[in-house]
Amino acid sequence: MKDRIQLGQSELKINPIGLGTNAVGGHNIYPNLDEEAGKDVVRTALNHGMNFLDTAFIYGPERSEELVGQVVKEHGKRDEIVLATKGAHQFKGDDVVFNNRPDFLKEQVEASLKRLQTDYIDLYYIHFPDDDTPKYEAVGALKELKDQGKIRSIGVSNFSVEQLKEADQDGYVDVIQSEYNLFKRDAEKEMLPYTADNHISFVPYFPFASGLLAGKYDENTTFDDFRAKNPLFQGEAFKENLAKVDKLRPIAERNEVDVPHVVLAWYLNQPSIDAVIPGAKRKDQVVDNLNTLKVDLTDGEIQMIDEIFS
Image (cartoon, rainbow, N blue to C red):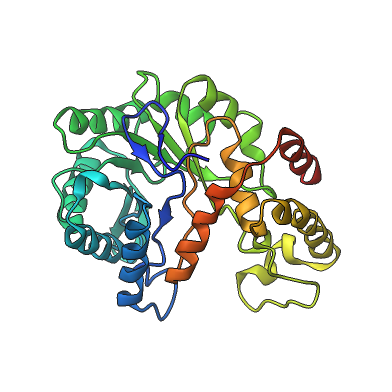
């Protein structure tokens, strides 16, 4: 597998194994995060050729962008790094709402540029759709910023197919990021065919289904967090899901890797999926994710995995 590819129709050249950084300064997502350890995760990624970093305003909030920006500035080779961030969350008192208004998005880009300590953002996503703003107007605002050189490519996240079509009516959308994994394959019905036909890159999040696809659980594993209420982790369904994951082990052994690498490699063999962005809390996890590049799935193995999880 190549270690540099083009992200969809954009001009971005990336390592297909990126780094999701919601655990870097994402104090509102994960408790008790060590910020220096988070910065070390980003340093390790860059030092091992992983140049695609994915962050967002809401991770922290703000702190993830700040820490990623510090490491990017320290690294010094800004032109070798592809920075992706996202905006749409607006705080109103104790409430958080989504806002896609052009003026708000432009303000958010300016604020992200400052936090990231950079003159441009390589990929800027509208993080969530709001209920009011015409999506082509929201994307049109980002196109203005792209023409000004403040962003290099345009993304949307968590959009439905209908919202994506509206957003892309002028052909400006380069990337969409949405949930997709072997246990949640709704995107295959309409989204992935549309993105493939329109040269839009699809970046999946939650690639390991809250750890279930990482191959590290067994029938005796118990959960006292959000997974306890997730149907994937309950009763007989949990046992059946573990059995499916176990069927990936022979494929992993043939490739001399572990189950998570096979899972990520399968995604990268799907139409319009150019990159994956697994998160990491430790340096060794970052390095381990790069083993995905060693995986060379045969057509038969790709089909087999498809059938196991169909």
